[in-house]
Image (cartoon, rainbow over all chains, first blue to last red; front, side, top):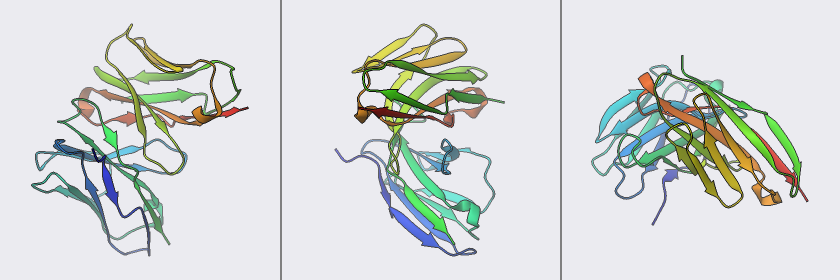
Length: 113
Length: 111
């Protein structure tokens, strides 16, 4: 079985630009969560979606948004990029709102210059 | 405010030298405590979930335990391939289903 798939793996953007990151969960998993991990820190929660509805939001500005599609895949969008947005963005899938634990993808490394 | 603190930040061991990593937490209504292993540039890899004080789980050279205030990850006779960052996370209270992570402990095992 395929694990959690994230694309792209690496991305370089310029300050002020917009970025879209994508995530495909494990087959059968209906919940997707997004985390930001800055170098040397633990992952920080951004969003959780379950059955295409937002079920949780972390302490991030409105420049961050996300959505979940009917096939349970998800997109994370970040507008007006800042240098501080440079991080590893992780997607985690679960059966339903944490039930059965969370499986993480390998992440997207975003560098803002 | 829910909080997770891991110690030490970094740990260097010789191959075969057993030790423990600590994860202390302050949360309202613990729903689960998770241990993950993370290699450089990769996503966290699930190790264990613990739900109640007194619970223990084992996998190869790793054993996780849980009390009401902290969790320990015991590493017995580590090998160089155990070198990684070990992350602790809790799912609790008002945070709902979000995981709250500590900063991690970076373990280096030399032969």
